[in-house]
Length: 261
Image (cartoon, rainbow, N blue to C red; front, side, top):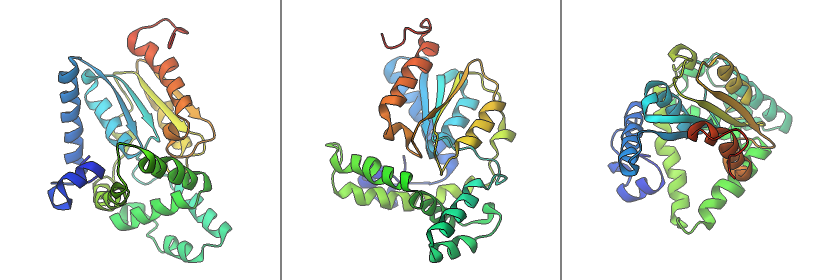
């Protein structure tokens, strides 16, 4: 997307254009239509991961005629700041581990997260991730490791990855008041959420509460065991199993139990 990795490397910070949620949401719809034309497909499967799931959920709600199913993983659920479980869990971890400097920075934040600046929000997210051993291990070995060893990337892009995250912080400023319940829990396409069972960034409990209120032709929820955030990358074999056995039969109309044969 704009402001990230190869796009950032190709055009530089000054060439990214408007970096707002609305602009990148429009980009996502344009990419959808490009793929549909390229493949000659009326509908495609939409998979939203991490912050991409904030876009994906809205695409699925607004444009069901473009997608045969929606899958959310590391699913972001916005509730206009009502749920503060991520924040409270972070405070507990920082107190337990004696991280006094980090604890002071978090305690100094406004109690209403909607008042946080983009920089404060990014600082909070970084501490949530790095204070949890499983998430930190996944970031080092899986996320950064894939960039390090992939033939599709160069060592220079490790720096662009970090720089892109900083540039993209501003996008979150336009989403602080989002409320997925208020925007609607009725979907006109199959909806799936596959969440890491130990996710500290996008808790499975919040995703499950939203899922339970969803009305959809087909819906399914599954936990990816022993995973925090980046569950699809931490356990790709389990995630692929879920795609083949739960999503594919719905999309292509296969009889139950025959997927992947």
